[in-house]
Image 1 (cartoon, rainbow, N blue to C red):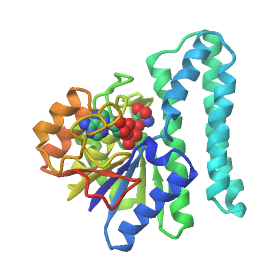
Image 2: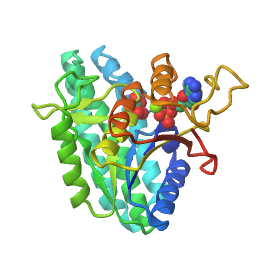
Image 3: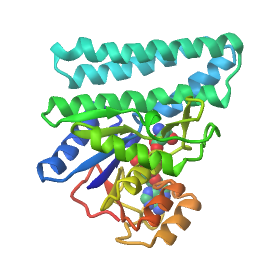
Image 4: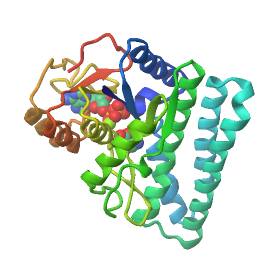
Length: 292
Ligand code: ADP
Ligand code: ASP
Ligand code: MG
């Protein structure tokens, strides 16, 4: 089986989400067994952080950002889901938005944003994107189930960058894999603490989610889809002539990511290395390209 991970830029709008659903479907049609980890819509996590901070600063304009967040997700649903299924799906989304709005109201009233509350706020990014992607897959005829990683990935309570409890998590993932109908679409980045509160795995942490899934399920490959053709010789945003490297060792990947190549989140390497699973970085905008 293979793990596929799609980053924020790969699911930034309805066209991108539809493209991702087609990529997943093409694996399934080719007879592959896959599980998917997905990030929040591009920019959504940053927006959620800003909302929390604005509310904590006593500035009620956080409501405008929240409205933008809601509208963006509702529009994606409107674009991608058949009209007759709108009510049920929008209902789920609206329920999440009410919960988010209550949370932000609490932050605004108390003028206090703890790391724990921030993780709770951030959870709405991946909860929304993964839920929507699962619905889109079903609609195009590929069975899928939405998996809230808070139920399977267990961590300590270091909110913002929580440490994963490996054994418990791997056992939960194996059970989830056995029980899920169709392709599991798992919220990247999220987990939960022993007290049951949402935790996050650090910025860029959906890569890590993919690697944890891969190690728990002894996947043959972990494929990270992003917006560039693999790991390049330098950050293409800074160096125009950067080109993709076809292969690299785990040690080289670890070194590059530690020195700031955000194409891969550093902790991602470890679970894959422990089980000797190859990680492939590919471009969701150019899926034919080999990648790294
Ligand atoms: P995603 O949303 O898919 O997780 P990220 O923005 O986290 O994507 O990572 C991809 C970005 O990493 C690229 O758009 C690129 O600008 C940046 N990057 C930095 N260094 C490198 C590198 N050496 N190779 C490839 N990409 C790099
Ligand atoms: N959405 C989270 C972030 O922006 C996780 C991720 O994208 O990997 O950091
Ligand atoms: Mg990333």
